[in-house]
Image (cartoon, rainbow, N blue to C red; front, side, top):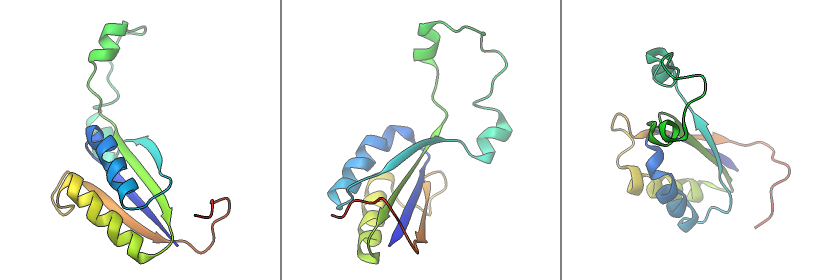
Length: 116
């Protein structure tokens, strides 16, 4: 078993990526809003000019600056390869700066997973 972990820099690609992962055979994905060191250091998501009680309009118009971190536990390297290919079909070549980061982590034991 492996955990496939993807930090997706463009949150607008989330739905398309989930469809691609499902098409590759994944039965479950956990999605987290995340922010990296670069965004934190630039203070993009932590601004001091936001009013204490923002209007609904300003919340809707605010630019989203968070990445998405997606992860799934998969049974074998064949599934890892399918997810990697599906990911690159959506985001492009992962070696390109700003596309995202994909990591594969071996799992020694996992409890609570449904058998497929």
